[in-house]
Image 1 (tube, rainbow, N blue to C red):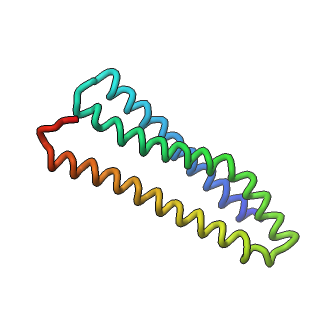
Image 2 (image 1 turned 60 degrees about the horizontal axis):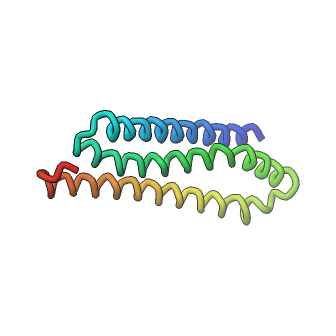
Length: 125
């Protein structure tokens, strides 16, 4: 049972990292938009905040769900270990697929920004 709580506690800690990066990115975007006010930095702000909101929401979701997941998996192992194969493993497969989707969305946003920057160098926003 310790390995289950260790895994989900590590997941919980990692989610706090996501939340922290999201908060820092949002603060940086606000700084760019309201303090620096140059067109290039205003352009950087939009995708920066969009990605930050994704990271922030995913991080909070995982953080608040982790304790419930620990209890659920521990109860499954104690009471109905056969359900691990039919409930927990498919659930974790969905979670892993979602993380791949988040990664590709973030990569796509970065590539779009880079392409726009290279194709339209005189358009600073």
